[in-house]
Amino acid sequence: VALFSAAGAAIGAAMGDGQPVLTFLTSLFSTILLGWLLWAVIAYFVGTALEGKSSVMEMARTLGYANAPGLLGVFAFIPCVGWLVALAGILLSLVAGVIAIRESMEFDTTKAVVTAILGFIVFVVARFVIGFVLGGVGAVGTSILG
Image (cartoon, rainbow, N blue to C red):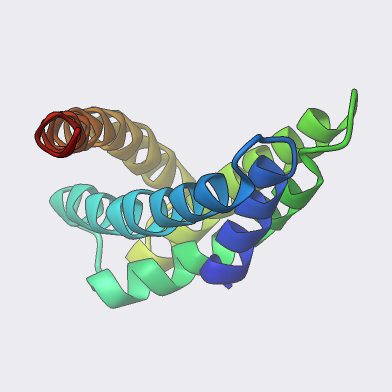
């Protein structure tokens, strides 16, 4: 489910771009590895710190299904309204993610929202650090090869 959702969003991103194959692959990689899997690991650790009961695999599975509305990202290329449809998919995925955390961790909704907010802060910092490191590696590789 997470793969189909990521592929849909990647197709939507690639449709309006000058390099559609590169954009598709980059978006797919980013969404799967740096999105869904990283989010599942972070949500697991934050949730267990708040006395939740889950496993990384269970969290990844439930958050994978919660990403299903992200498939609406395939419509992102449509002029004027495509971004609204893609945004609706993101917002629905966010709501489904809180429900997934609640059910996976056996929390009440308040703890699930706190887990999602704290996890999102850690997630943003981790994505920034990973992007910075990968960007630095890419710049070094480009300078060596170029």
